[in-house]
Image (cartoon, rainbow, N blue to C red; front, side):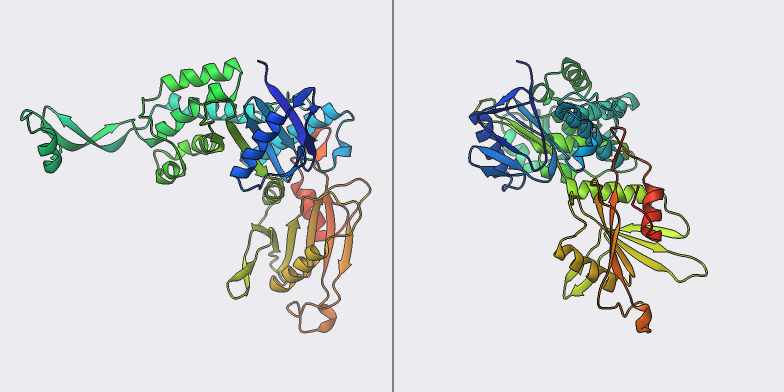
Amino acid sequence: MPPRIIQVFEHETLRYPGQRNGVAFTEVDFRALVRFNERHRNRYFTVLHQGVRFSQYVGVVQVGSLTVEILPKADRETAPGTEAESQACWQGVLLDMLRECRLLRGVASPAPLHCPPGSILEAYLDAFLTETEALLRKGLVKKYRSEEANQDVLKGSLQFSRHLRENAVHPERFYVRHQTYDARHPLYRVLRGALQLFPRLTGQPRLVGQAQRLASHLPPTAGERVDERTFAAIRLDRKTEGYRAALDLARLILLGYQPDLRGGREHTLAILFDMNALFEAYIYNQLKGVESGTVRVEKQVAAYFWENKRVRPDIVIRTLGEKAEPVTYVVDTKWKALRQPQPDDDDLKQMYVYNQYYRAAKSVLLYPATRGLGETHGSFRLGNPFLSDDPAKQAHGCTLQFVQLVQDGKLRKDLGASLLKGILGGQGAAG
């Protein structure tokens, strides 16, 4: 059966009976999505009458034979005209943004507008195969492990009580615990477990064949379940630090996969990201890339404001001129498509508090660009006494800035300099 792939944008609604991208969305698909969402405390979408409305989470959900790709939707009007071209554009943008935020490594960026449906899941599977193959080429890392067994020779320490119980009629044997130096340790159990899932996750012969080939080169492992505790028990050291990327990808695959215990075909796999956090990480990486000796960029700088409660802006920028006084700017990213240059009241109150606690004369609310909106600055009525003892110098405010993410159908990767100039100088739109 050919793969059934549906593409939607975040905050869109998908109803049954219906079609999307020429693929039928049935009641069976709907109920499988609802069960998946309930297992995750209804965090990923809202259940409606005969349909679901997606939220700010983007990525891929696979339920049974259906794969749903959820794409970002900000500034869709700047993407190519047709629905299919718009979906292909934003799919490529999402993949590039994941790479820029180091959430997807090992696979080259696809050509714009040539990402086939299903590319998000296949990109993660391909990246995992690339990382695993690179590790195998370097050779398996061996480690000491403790092993207990009934043996014909006395090796290691005799486990006396177990020895008596096991060998009452076999005096020629010894039940011992000893150290073994080999490649059979949890690292390879995790990698092998992820590789063995490939036939259930994709119908691409190339990916399945490569996964089976790589699995055959890994040491056989016992059928122990891989869960959160397995990953928590793994401690990387100097010899195994190179396994981090492969383990991160394996974690997404193994912990995101939930088999159908009833024996049907409704297994689920979810690789989803909060678009608010992804946009914040992308902007931070762009700004951090143009950091200099006179400008320092920090993220998630917390400050206490009441008892044990803290405020935590997304990004704090500090200028460190030798002669001029240091100046602080607070930036909060908002993945919202504004239609008017009017921020939410709660966002403005948040920025007012940030100015007070971080001694900033200016804070910035940074949005993805929306056609027709430009930079807007407003002043707070009450001054900021942390700036100066002189009331005339206590003025502070908040600026709305808009960043153009997409150019020629691709994610922009050169925003840092113009974005920083807009924040520090307060002139023009970002990007």
